[in-house]
Each structure stands twice: as structure tokens, then as C-alpha cells.
Length: 164
Image (cartoon, rainbow, N blue to C red; front, side, top):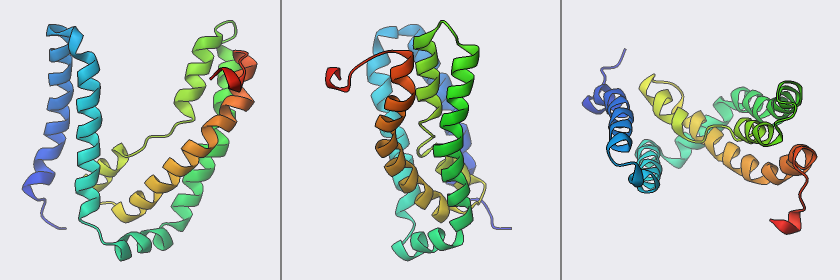
């Protein structure tokens, strides 16, 4: 087994420390929430860039062929099974709460983008396949969100796309 680098050893503690610092900052200065959201987004982006910068295009393309089955299963679960499951749960358990049901569906049809790469790297997993999956998730998420809104949300909260 390979030795962990100093960054690999420190990274989980930095993530946990960041959570606690954010909670502390919010309790002391709640007006900084809007700024802290930006800081968190930039921080996650930088972590992902650091992970991706160590990989060549040939390594990433090999992640596609090596992880073909993982990518297919993840795509089917994230973009076919989960939206149907979310709709079923929302319309069964959240009857009379259309706004909550819509939020629940939106939360479930937007899979995690990026965080898993950090933990995949820490676990010495297949980061290259994770990078390919990240691209697939982003493209499908952006493409399918309007479709999900049309299919699922307009029934809960009537709206016209021209109003958006």
C-alpha cells in the first residue's frame, strides 16, 4: 500500500475544520452567510482543480474505458431511477406541501458534483473514472433539469416556462 502524502493526511481534518469554522463564523456574524457561500464554492472548486490537475488527458480517457460499467450504472441511478423515486416519495409523503415536495425533488435530481472526487482520492479510488463521471453528471444535470421541472414540478406548483 502506498504511503499517504502530507496533503492526504491533512485534507480530512481541513474539511472538518472548515465545517466548524463556518458554523462558528455564522453564529458570530450571521450577515456573512452570502459571502461564506461564495468562499465555500471557490474552495470546493479549488480542491477539485487540484485533484484534476494531477491527471493527464490519457489517464482521464482511460478512466472512461475502465469505468464504463460504473458510469452506466451511476447514470441510470442518478437520472432515471432517482427522479422517479423522488416523485413517488414526494407525492406520497408530502401531500399538501407542494413547495416542500418540489424542493425535495429538486434536491434529489441534482446529484453531487465534485465532492466525491475528494473522498475518492483520499480512499485511493479510481479518480480518473470519477473525473469522467463528473463531466457526465454536469452535462446530464444541466440538460435534464428543465425536463424534470416540466415533468414533475409543474404538476405540484403550476407555472409557465415563459414566467421563468
